[in-house]
Structures are given as C-alpha cells and as structure tokens.
Length: 185
Image 1 (cartoon, rainbow, N blue to C red):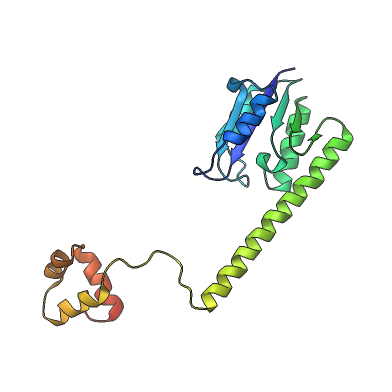
Image 2 (image 1 turned 180 degrees about the horizontal axis):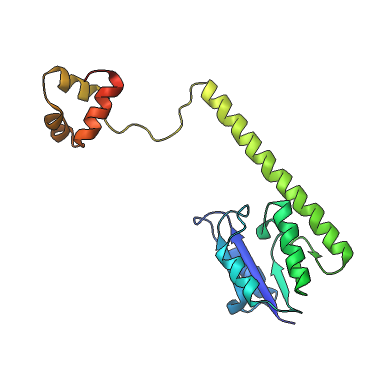
C-alpha cells in the first residue's frame, strides 16, 4: 500500500501549505503529493489528472478535507467510483472518513451533496447581495481613470481627437469612444 496525497485551493492567491503539511504529517512522501490551484467545480485539474495516472490497486489517497477533492456531488461520486474500481481508497483526514467499505462510500456521497448545497447557497447569497447593492446604487467594476469632463471641455474648445489624446495621455480611439458616449462627436 502506497500513500498519495491530494491538496487543492480555489485560487492561485491561496496557499496549499497547511494541506501539504498535514499530508506529510500523515506519512505521504513529498513526491507523492499532487496539488491544484483551481476551483473544485472544475473536473479537469492537472494535479488530479496526474494523480489518477500514478495510482494503482491497493494505494490510498489522503485528502485533508472532503471539499478539497471536489465540490460537485456528481463529480465526487464519479471520482470515488473511479478510484474504487481501481482498488484505491480515499481517506479524508479532517472529516475522519474513508471510502473503504460500504458505509464509508455512503457517508462520502452524503457529505459531498452537502458540500455542493453549501456552495450553491454561497452563490445565491452573493447574487442576492449584488442585486441589493445595485438597487442601492452601488457600482461594480473598475473606477474610471480618465477625466471625461476634461475630454469634453477640450473638444468644446475646438481641439481634435489627436490633440486631446496627446494632452491627456490616452489613445485617440479612447477619445472617440468617450465623445461618442457623451454625444459630443
């Protein structure tokens, strides 16, 4: 039986250190730890794909938490079935569960469904908050960096797009775009 580890974070700004440390403390060699920095809702993950190639019958995959393997219930079940057909068990360190045995598989299926429902609730709350903020006049996105009034003032003074662009330090096409938006072409 060989131990393998899998760690995942959702974004490239997050750190894998805590998960990797836990896997090493559980006895996984550094060369057998596979990682990804991508959302668990994506099935195509480089680290997970490489792990699938390396494992063999009798191996055990350690994962710190259930939601690190994946967020979508159907994908989690498919992964667990795939590993089970290969004769590979998956153990979740923090959750204290394993796919070894019928009861373990059932618990993992239930917990992965809960993880998916939690993710859906987070998305719904985020969208509700965004809609409410927009209704209150909150603007999303990058703040304008160009003084639009200045562009219009310079145009009204009779300057051409090329002169305005040079004076403000922007592209001529940006000047045309801004003037079109305010109807001052």
